[in-house]
Image 1 (cartoon, rainbow, N blue to C red):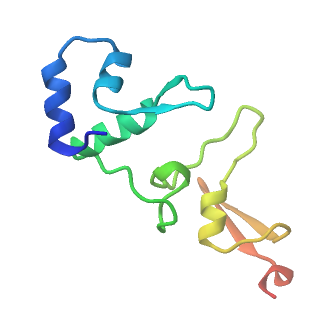
Image 2 (image 1 turned 60 degrees about the horizontal axis):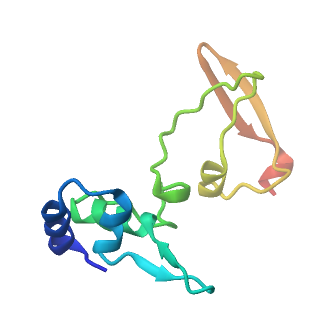
Length: 120
């Protein structure tokens, strides 16, 4: 499997070929149990992005959610009126299922304050 500048050079050299031929020519192929060919598109595109200098991040790093996405610190009200915070944020605060909060409303803001039971 080609990586880095070798991968970029091969992609440029091949020019206008099908995506399948491109992935195959760059070596992102494995063999299935039945002997058939499996094209590893995801690994190819990840290597291509990395070769172009796009850092996808590493899981488990603070401030990063699932899949390497950075936390935006923005929540959107859903169609049913719920406001979802998300697991990545609750994990950063080490919140557990059942933790309770008082809701304090201000002008254009919502504050969540842990109740006494949650502080224990």
